[in-house]
Image (cartoon, rainbow, N blue to C red):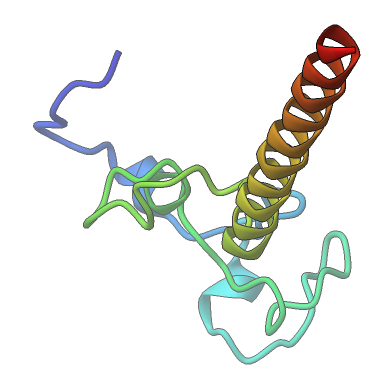
Length: 104
């Protein structure tokens, strides 16, 4: 259940490494390129706070699920349409063959 957040604890706003959670003094100056604790590349995976990761700050990133790729969803729709079309062709062929067999 989601509720409106009225206050945020300052610990939730502290930016940390997204790989290991390290939030030490070496990360505060932002001059390093890798996390000193785990070696995570900070340019590829920038520092984020728990509030940012949980969506407590700002607008949500997307209404759709982050696990559904739009291209994958489009391919899935095309597959279902092809399946329905071929099913209808199959049913028409069966109906035609039944009508031909009964007409004899």
